[in-house]
Length: 339
Image (cartoon, rainbow, N blue to C red; front, side, top):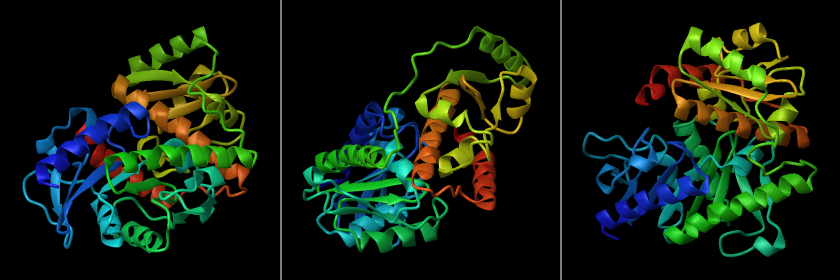
């Protein structure tokens, strides 16, 4: 495939993945093989809805070098591992999709594939690679080790997300969609009782608006109220919601406190975190603007699902505090400034 066509297909995939809900904003990355020596990949920290073919970066497979001022995704190394391991693979999608991400926090090393899903893309199991900080050589190495063992066209990256691939655009995208079906079914078959509903039917309590007004007056930015069955279950817990996924550590913080419907308590909880859970109510999520607050809400929903999944498999081991703090500081100092 010539370079320009490869870049166009990456842009197209980004838009389709946004519409599907498998990725949001800049989370995840997409690439297409150009030839044996190079591949085209999404740039670092760019919203997929704004991308054009000229924004997609051409990267050399041998040394991950590139030309020009646009930086490629920091996860370019795991894409290279796919292309090196599977000569027949031409398209790679790295997602932070909800149910695969939830199982990434389960402590499991492999996920069985139901018989009706077994195909060229999915054999008898989906492997999970060891955890490592995002964008690091260790993550690349761990992914590579798992890729060399798998017989399926997807692996799960622990506490992180999924890596899906195929011989072309359509097969890679189908793999990502089927992976979500497999993961949700497996969680619920094991008693997870995870709902696919995005929100509950309950309306926003009127008193929440007074809290929102006071916080915005003091802190600025934007606040959004969100709930779904998983958030409400986590809001029943006595302790805070901790990072079971690395994007929670980066964007929300080291924890989201669980509070009663007390205005002062809620305001205090939002001083050191982007979100707070309110018992029997839902979550308040803060961002610099509406889009940012909605992103925080999405991550809280996803991390709530990951926590409940980890609980289902008796593996309540959040990301350690040091790694969580490091990711949070890097995000605040560098990545968040891209918005």
